[in-house]
Image (cartoon, rainbow, N blue to C red; front, side, top):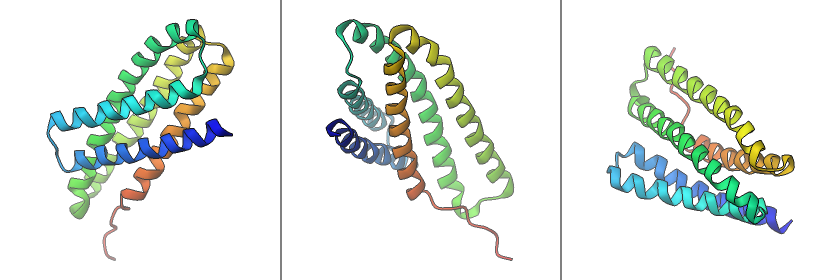
Length: 164
């Protein structure tokens, strides 16, 4: 139970950082500032994973390089998501059907790529960890992702519909 509470606390902190970073994208901060935000997010997430995976030394030695590769690819998807949110923010007051279609198509593409990424890395994680720890890792990733999506959903307003 203590581990679960710790995960929730860290997820709340990580969520707050991600929200600031995402909103910063919408406000067009400099590339240097965004790099600092993303580095902080990555460090906090790695801490959550580290404290909850209960890896042996040999497991850790094999796991962390695969984890880092996965996070690097996940970062590309999160960057794409941040751009999509910025595009939505920019078009919010004058959203057209064409813009709405492009945004929704981009969202679906990102979701498809995220699933493919998780599927592609599953055999890699299975190669370096026992199955139970692979499940645990995917659960941690899922909980973090769910917390992030929950926070984003609360901050992103629904699209305005045309007045009838």
